Every structure is written in structure tokens, then in C-alpha cells.
Image 1 (cartoon, rainbow, N blue to C red):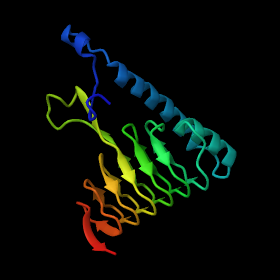
Image 2: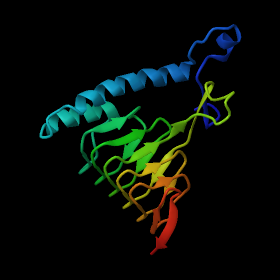
Image 3: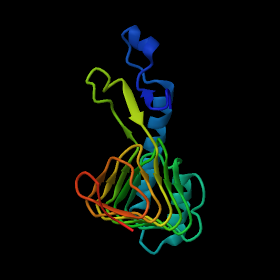
Image 4: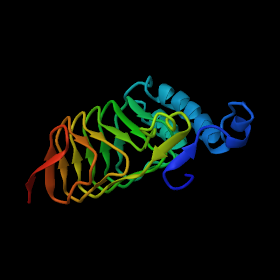
Length: 192
């Protein structure tokens, strides 16, 4: 992304002339989002036992075959797909969302509970910049992590090996290895 954390939404030269034309990078991302939305819509209505159909659509969504022993239960949502890096033995339960344009890595053996959300992109807080830029930072989840149901992982977060994120937790800061975080601020409650 431009400047590591910002992507221009509109072409600045054309905008200076009063035209609201999408920037090249934003337009490419937007086209990919539309394509992946169509693919995930098809994935999410397949019969549950249609393993071949699910595998074919997930390969198109992710840009590569699923790694060995990865399980994804639909419904499954992603806005880009090509920047979602799944290691072996990852388990993703139903209703999870991965907004992965800035990159999401799930290490080996990661378990994700139902309705968990991973968000790598957002908008600046400053109202003058909000409609001009997207902000973003990757999410990195180390090996053997358990993300509880309904947890939300925000841009730029790293979660250490063997950590547990309790159900409903909002994680805005890094999580140490071998720890349990819980609550609306993702507070460390226990370490082992």
C-alpha cells in the first residue's frame, strides 16, 4: 500500500480538477472485492457435503489450493482472499469474516470460533481524510492460537503462540504468547 498504511481512494490529479475518479490501486482492490463477494456468495449456498465444490471456490477465492488439513465451515466471508495466508491444520468455524487486503496470516493449528472477525483495513479518524484514504496493517496469528467466538481482531495486531482470545474480545493491541486475553479491551487475564 502507498506509504505502508495509506491507500488513496481518489486520483489526486483528477480530484484537483474537480473529478472524483478512483485511484488505480483502489479501483483494482474494489474490482477484486466485487469478484470475491460473488465467489463467497456462491460458496455459502453450496450443500455442506459438496467438498469438491467448496474446494474449487476456495481455491479461486484464496488464489491457491487449501493447505493440508485446513477446515473452513461456511458461511465464510472475505473481501480480498489473496492476502489470507493459512497454514496447515487451521480450523475456521461458521460465519467468520476476514477483511484481508493488508494481509492476515494464521499459523499452524490455529482455531477460529464462529463469527470471529479479522479487519486489516479502515479509514483515518480525521474527518478531512476519512473519504480520501484507507488505512491498513497486517494481522499475524502465531501457531496453536485459539480465537473465541465473536472475537474481533483489529489492524496491526500480532497474537503470540499458544495464546487464547476469549469469546467476544476486541483485540486492538498485540497479545503475548501463552496468554489469555478477554474483555472489551483485550486485557491479559492469565499467562502460562
